[in-house]
Length: 509
Image (cartoon, rainbow, N blue to C red; front, side, top):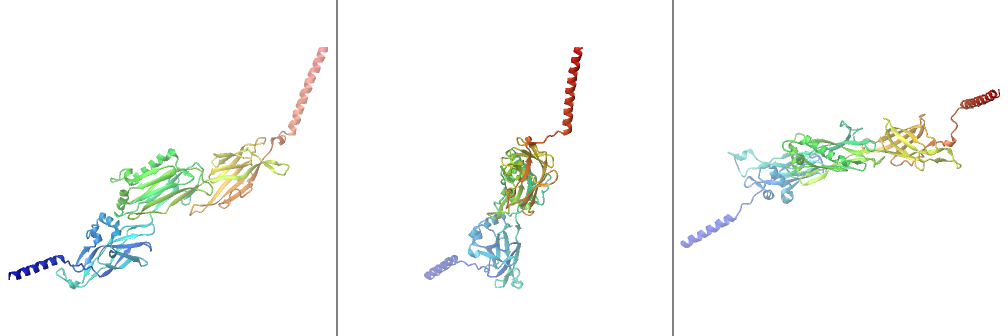
C-alpha cells in the first residue's frame, strides 16, 4: 500500500510539474476589418500600420505584440513620449506585425487588419508632413452572446471598421519678396526690380512653422537665405542685420516659455548668407500656438557685379522635418534685381571725313548721365575707339551731355535723351529684352537698339556723335562789326594826324 501511495504521489508530482511547464497558446483574432486613413493628399505615399496590440480569442482579452512589449508600450496608452519612441524604432517590428495600406483613388485602407491597436506612419513623397497616428479596431460581440456582462467564448464576434484622419502640414510655406520702405511688394509681385548699382534694397521673408506632434523629437526647421553674385550685406551692416532679425523673432514669438533669442533660434549673418536655425523645443511648442507664422525684413546692397540678363539673385531655402528622423528641402524662393550697362551704342567721331572717306574716332571726350531727378548718375570718357560705357544703371530716362571735348575740338552743346526700357516675364521675373533709345535735342532718333539674351550690344553699329576741330571753326563775328571796327580805327588815326598837323602849324606861327 505504501508503495502504491508513493507511486501515486510521484505520478501526481510529475503531473503537476508537467502542468506547470505547459502553457496555453494564445489565439490571435482571425476576424478582419477595414482600417482607413483619410486626408493624405498624394497617391504614391507609403502608409504602413504597425500592430501594437492584438485580440486573444482564447482569453478574450487584448495583448501586446512582442515588439510593442519590447518598446514598453502600454495598452491604451497615447503617451507622446512612448509613441515617439515606437515611431523611431519601426524597423524592429516583425513581418507579421506590419500591414501596408493601399490607395483606392481617394483614401488609403486595408481589409486585412484584425482587432487591436496600430501605429500608422505615413511617408510622403512630396513636401507634406504627416504626423504618426494611432488606430484601434475593437471587437464587438453579438448581443445574444452576452449574459450578465459575461461573454460566451463560443459566441461569434465581429471587428468594427475604423477611419482615422491624417494630421498634416501641406507644402511648408515660405516666401520672400522685394518691398519698399513701407513694406509693400515692389512691381507686379515683388519678385523682381531694376535699380542703380549701390542701392540698398529691402527683402521680406515670411513663413509658417509646421505643427508637429511629439513623435518629431528632434524637429528641424531652418531657413537659409543666399545672396548671389550682385548682392551683399556690407561688413558695417552685418551686426545690424543680425540684431534686426533677432529683434523681430522676439517680437513674433517671445512668451513666458521662450523669452530669449537663444531659446527660439540661432541667427548667423555674413556678407552673402543669412541662416536661421529654429530650436527643436520651440518648433514642437508651435503645435499648440495660435499662430506660428512670421515676417522678417532686412536690407542688402546691389553691387552691380551682375548686369543685363545676369541678375543679382537672392534665394531662400527651407529645410524641415517631414517624417520623424528625416529632413527634406522645401521649394526655394528667388528674387531678382537688374542693373543695365550702356555701352557700344554711341561713338565719338570727327565731323570731317579723312582722305580714306572715314570719320576718325575721338578719345578723351567726357560724357555725363543725369537722371530724371536732375542728379548726375555717372560719367565716362571715350576710349581710343571713341566708345563710352556706363554701368549699373536703373531703367528710366537720362540726359546725356558732353562735359569735356577731346583735345583740339570744340565742346558739343547738344544734349541727348537716353531711355532704357526693360520687358520682363511677370511670372518668373526673368528679363526678356531691353531697349536703349537715343534722341537728340530735336527729338530725332539717333539710335534705337533692342537686346535679348541671344544678342548683345555688339549686334548693332553704334550711333555717331561728332565734334568739330577748333582750327576749322568759322568766324563768329559779323561783317558789320568788322566794318565799324575798321572805321573807328581810321577815324582815330585821322584824328591823331590832324592833331600833329595843327600842332606843327602853331609852332611855326
